[in-house]
Length: 124
Image (cartoon, rainbow, N blue to C red; front, top):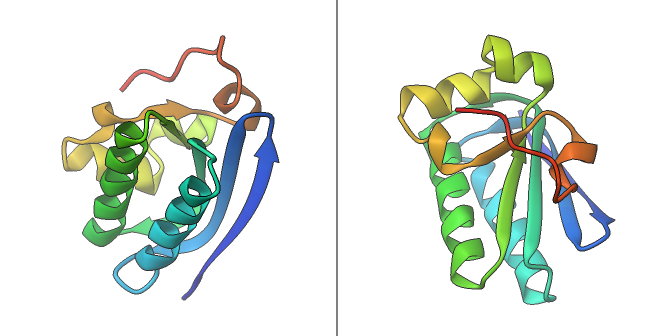
């Protein structure tokens, strides 16, 4: 399976929509997409994981590296996990929780809240 990444800009935010599997083979695509956004001066990035149905440790690693990159350039990284998935435990949410890294990320249920500076992230 592959991972498709589509980019949208919403105000000061770059939203990277992902569909597919986030694993050893596809995680470099995410890494490059985040680096490309930073390279053109986009320091606020949302990773829309609502259509990612598989994530392994390589995927988690690229999420953590993306967080580190955004923090180093004074930017922000937010994740989108669907509202139901965030409550009931989507695959990505379960993997992040099982590895004890879910608390590192600001997670939102949808686009609108992820790009809204007034919205509060979902609790870990």
